[in-house]
Image 1 (cartoon, rainbow, N blue to C red):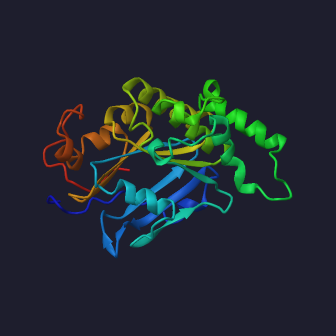
Image 2 (image 1 turned 180 degrees about the vertical axis):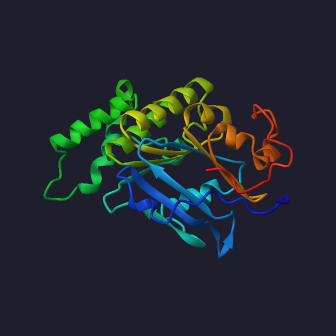
Length: 272
């Protein structure tokens, strides 16, 4: 294909979402955009339990628009987002900057907010189940040591741990994170991505994270989704598949690709 042509992902079989209890979410011929204008080629992918999917691409490439579409905050141009059942619970972790840094609450109270969806005036106080879920979430997110500290006094990495614990307290199946490491130093960033990978593997969550650090994303995620509004292109696969794809190399150069693809390698369709 010539530069600028679509590079669609490999489509799942029509009955793919009907099989396997591990499947949580499908994008089926999903076209994202605004006012009926597409930003990217159709996206076809499946998100299963235990998956850690990192979404990468330049600023303005369509990552945030895709995220908003998954969350139901924006309507697709065409296609659909399909959850495998009504009992699939999803939760969203914004950048820590999206939470008021001056909130006069302790981390434990912030995490407890993740349990408030079932609150009502007949049950105004937390139950034993709520308290158990909060403590387990704090431990899983590595936020136990900061549980009693005011949120506003935490470092960016600690704030993100508290936000992750809040989401884990909801006992969600699918966790969506928008650049959770954007304000962290390199050490905190690696620790966070490693923890997310461990949670996906040990708790059988599906974790989808928008990431700006390509190498860290490639180290810990088991799948990458590269989106490029300029080409336009969508590439789904492991690190070598994505980093050696011409659309990726056009944006980031050859430093990430351990080997160049054969001469004449087409821009699409992308491997999935």
